[in-house]
Image 1 (spheres, rainbow, N blue to C red):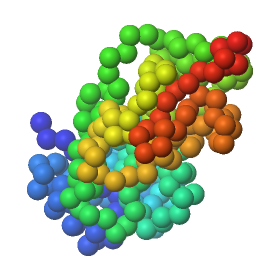
Image 2: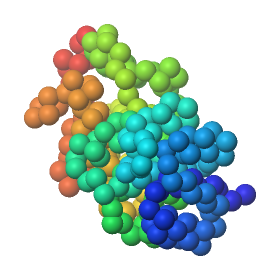
Image 3: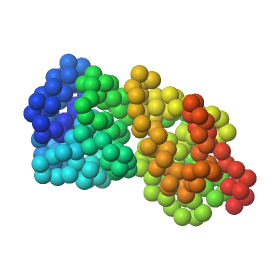
Length: 236
């Protein structure tokens, strides 16, 4: 069965070009040009993926992303000429799976859609054998999809939670950035993206990390990251 992609783009030429590329790769594509249409069709169509432009005539794309995420776990890929770090962070924080700056290469965007679908179909990170990881002051409950730090519940997006779990269950091991991008996002190393960096930054803030002296998520320069539960973390 062909996967269905809902494209939300008010620029007719940009929408037509993307539709042609997606259909060339055997996707079924529907295009809508307003946020209101997108909300209706997302509910009716139940697409396998959604490509969302932020500059819409009626609803801000970030608000639309938030509203869609409340109703669905469909992979959302934002495409926008708004390229500030704040827009990128907000988009990912509101639940988007990726953020692609305009102008973009159509073939690369198609690859990102394919990657999002692979991740959804595989269920993300595989091989889980435990449901709870307890590091004293930090507790991660996979079944309950909850994280507590010093007894306080932290609200994580689905992707932030998957990233934290992938690192924490491999505590002490260096996890390569390329592996995380492939395992969690389905991205081959040919795709260049700052998605992982942004997610790591947001995750550290939510874990009350000191950016200069992180307690849990350690950067291994030019390689990746390592989850390290220090003695003070285990003592709680």
